[in-house]
Length: 79
Image (cartoon, rainbow, N blue to C red; front, side, top):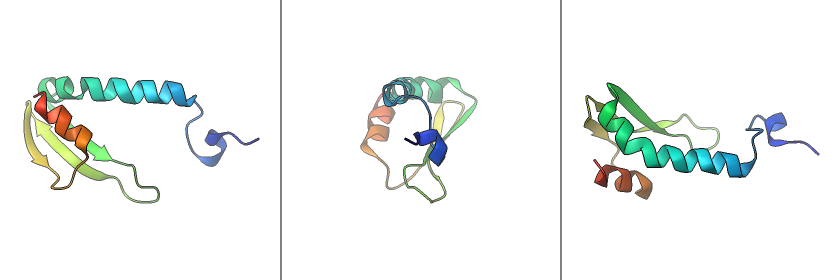
């Protein structure tokens, strides 16, 4: 049986990856506020170049993509 890592993906169990994902979303609003500069990318589409969803500097959002996922709206509501 080939594991996902053999196909170019992650070798960690899905539960670990989901935990990392959930933690990242919980901490994103804080990261936007506290980092000098931050960019959030959407890499959900296979075989495409990741697109910029958000850019912020000094805690201020300077750019947000017109079409963005609902989870990003929830993060922005926490700012």
